[in-house]
Amino acid sequence: MTAAAVTGLGVVAPNGLGTADYWAATRAGTSGIERITRFDPSGYPARLAGEVPGFVAADHLPGRLLAQTDRMTQLALAAADWALDDAGVDPREWPEYGMGVITASSSGGFEFGQNELRKLWRHGGQHVSAYQSFAWFYAVNTGQISIRNGMRGPSGVVVSDQAGGLDAIAQARRQIRKGTRLVVSGGVDGSLCPWGWVAQLASDRLSGSDDPARAFLPFDTRANGHVPGEGGALLVLEDAAGARERGARVYGEISGYGATFDPRPGDGREPGLRRAAEIALADAGIRPADVDVVFADAAAVPVLDRIEAEAITALFGPYGVPVTAPKTNTGRLYSGGAPLDVATALLALRDAVIPATTNITPDEAYRLDLVLDAPRPMPGRAALVLARGHGGFNSALVVRRPES
Image (cartoon, rainbow, N blue to C red; front, side):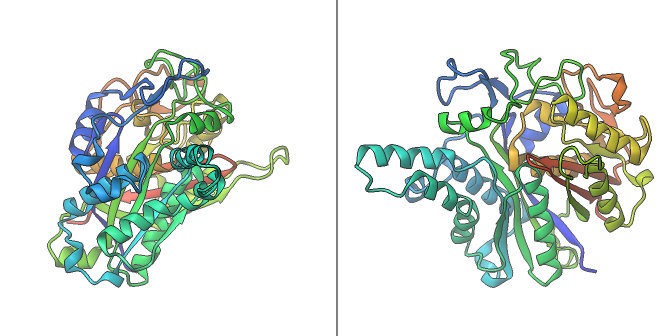
């Protein structure tokens, strides 16, 4: 069966603009979580976020796009450009129907909708409603990337919260297997604006701490919710044989994928995360012993941390596999978070090193071998990435080091 190879990475993250800066910061344990600067958060019960630093849209995009897009789409367009450049791909030299764009969206659209709502108030209803603009926005990232690069092949948007980034990459792999030569996939998300912030607060899962070192503590007895962030990663996926034929550098292969949905609360059945991981491993044709590291979803909500820890220990045994959550340095990026974890996993496999989870003191009741304080060497064969979306979505993805 056709293998899907990752040949390009484009990263926009709160602790690094661009793949190289992000990876250096992640290996060093550098955090991008700070007090919000994009609006005044003083009147809200949560005031910290992971904001992408130093991004000036006019430095990366033509002026005609600036008026048509909000920050989330601008970040996505820049990440797509960087991913294609990293892959050595000039879209003008590729068949337009042989390239597609499949991304994920979750929390984004609020800033665009908020701006439209302001126009509605100012101009007496002469603009599209905020609800319509929010619904339409789900397709904006994919559409703008597609139009900008002349990519007219199979495209789409997946909406399943934090799990959506893995679901989008899996859908891109399906299209590669069906014959599409190249797909830009992943997710860049964010809604750091007053309207988006209120919507996130409604989940009751945001940390109220004002100390960046104590605000986002998954698998810790002090866990009290997550810190949101903006950004994510876009990946260039190609047919592995075609990528090697054109001499492309290959970061790794998308080898396995599984997705499940949690049962209705209170019916006594097991949550679906473990089963999603089992499906992904079976799809990849590997055993738990072949996995060098698990990139955890890391909700920092005690009941959800327990569910994830139980899923990992059921599959690998207590302390049976190194576990890491570098998102403690970025916050949860919604549909951008899991693609960023996939990019991080690929870089970790390339360099045979596991980045650490920062700030936490693990609760030993979870029985996890969390990588703490400093990066840890590893063989660099395969990584399992876990992600969960609000409402019961579970996804798991296996990435493997490319065959030499």
